[in-house]
Amino acid sequence: MRQRGARSLVRGRRRRRLALVTPWPPEQSGVADYSLRLATALAEHVDVEVVVSGPVADFAVAPARRMKVVSSLSRDMLKRLRWSDRVLYCMGNSSFHLHVYELLRQHPGAVLLHDAQLTGFYGWYAGREQPDDPLGRLVERVEQDYGALVPPDELRTAPLSWERRAALGIYLTAEIQRYAQQVFVHSQFAQQVVERDGRVAGHGAPVSVMPFGMPPPSPDGARSSAGQPPLVVHMGVVGEIKGIAVLIEAFAQVAARHPGAKLLLAGPVDDAAIAHWRSFAAREAPSATIELLGRVSVERWQDLLAAADVAVQLRVVSNGEASAAVCDCIAAGVPTVVTDLGWMSELPESAVARVAPGVAPAVLAGQIGELIADLPRRALLSAGALACAADLSFERVATDYIAALGLA
Image: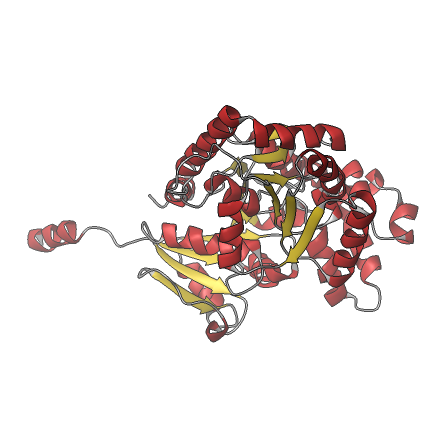
């Protein structure tokens, strides 16, 4: 008996198992890309089973030896979740999270809320629940969670705009909290939003702030001089909520002071939006060179970051999300202007330049111009950005999750 006990001690305990239920490449989702990086780092500590929405053959293969990709359509899926030591659901505000939502309702676990605003997901899901009246179904959800806080007549006449959702405090995270053992978010702003939602609905879950992982810092080092003529970029989804209008108006003033300067906007945008923003630029900045590139390849994305002199990443309102595009700018050492709002307001002051929400075009133009011309400030900001990326590595973030999930 003693010999068997001795052999058991030599072998040690088994490696822990984590099920990660998430969107996954090649799905066109920022959460999918983030989960790929996070899962790879987590696999250094635990066995990771990535649960995807459809057949495994449709998804990227696991990049690490202690990872496995499995389909949520498997007959034994709930049994597999029960076999895991912990389950981490990666939930966001789009249709890519359907299997995350449906499995969470069947098997509780920890939830990583990439967005503290889920009205987009629930608006889409309402179309599955009540195809003949999706708005009516969404209204039912809002009334169930918020009751008298939202004027019923306003809900029934039209879908709530993002301005009204922000003003009324409608985030729709309560149901997710009902099934969650614990909730992780990426900022104190998101934590406050989610905790408030839980209190309003009467069934909140414990909410913790976890750092948002960043790519490795560029090996090229800090940037000092700017190109002549300078290149200004905006990376990521192009839309009204990203402050594109004020950026274009501000760039008209930058271009007047720096002849030949270019503004390139790289990121997803539909045909109607491209036409709108091109027309807006022609009207508000007729003498400036402004190009909407749409979605670009990974190689083109990296080339733009390597060439950029200044990045401008604004938000009109925060949904509690962190921005992978901002992280890419920081990791590349690009002097970056962000809105002092939500997650971006909690980045180190040494890593980004901030402007107030609702910034005037003239003020933004002055900030961009300063980052082009002030070489010592450019160098300091670039060095601070690289240090930030090094500190918030996916390796460090994975270690934090292992501890928070009790898998150490």
